[in-house]
Image 1 (cartoon, helix red, strand yellow):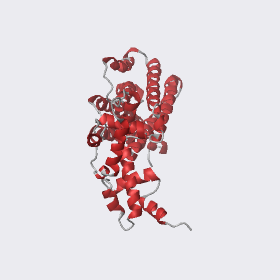
Image 2 (tube, one colour; image 1 turned 90 degrees about the horizontal axis):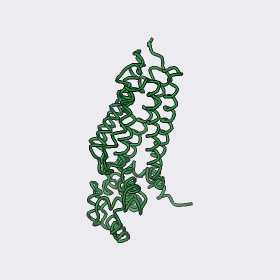
Image 3 (cartoon, one colour; image 1 turned 120 degrees about the horizontal axis):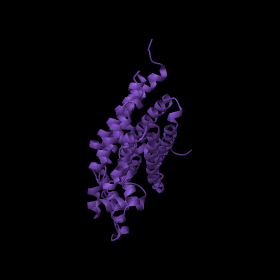
Image 4 (cartoon, one colour; image 1 turned 30 degrees about the horizontal axis):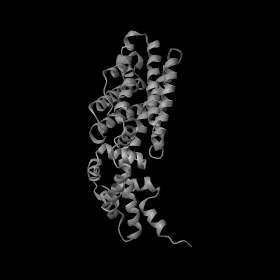
Length: 344
């Protein structure tokens, strides 16, 4: 018979999952995910955030396996006070990587000295107020991209959930002196894990998520780069390159290479696609490839789906299936069968 209840075992598993997944997300962001303008600031703040969240989850793990209260341990307290400003810094540099760094931004980390200057029953409510404020700030930043609702519908849900969780944690922070601390540990453990899980699902579903958000945010909040550009002429040239020259067939097609062919800089092409077509570069290329595949699926019924995926620039059949399902709501096979059926 296990000495732990089912509830405790579930929380142990949740804490371990969140700690491991957070580290994997850091490695993916630092080494695998291609984000225009990614800098040492965004990677460093991501590392600080992951270190804080992992430490918090380790504190929960120790507690659920019979250890002392996390709030009695300095490492847990320090991680709590580092997490909100690290979250703000990562959100800022991940979504607005080209924003100018100002030393005054380091003032956000003044939450850390609160740990030493104030008693816990005062410091924690102040800390969670900052945390909720940062979550609402980032949610509002993303909400500013609501004209891209079709492109970022899942991301809007994600930031809404994160903002709601932050407000609930804020309430628990104020209630800590008056409630059983177990309630706080259980909820905070699950809130961190849920946030990590949603980000994991989002990045698996769309590995270009952060890059797409970065492009859209730069166009929304930055100065226009198209003032001296023949926008209509460039749009027409882009259309010719993708339809007549079939540049989408190049599986290594990048923003830089397509921009050079159009005669623009990468930032200019990104803004052009975002403002005139309402989507990011990576989604634009995926949709061009899927549209070409839809034509081939009907016009060449004898060709295999694998050969069509390779001919339209997808690196793998699995990537083709995912993009096709995202764009059309059907698998390539289902689409071919539905289009080949003759009406009664």
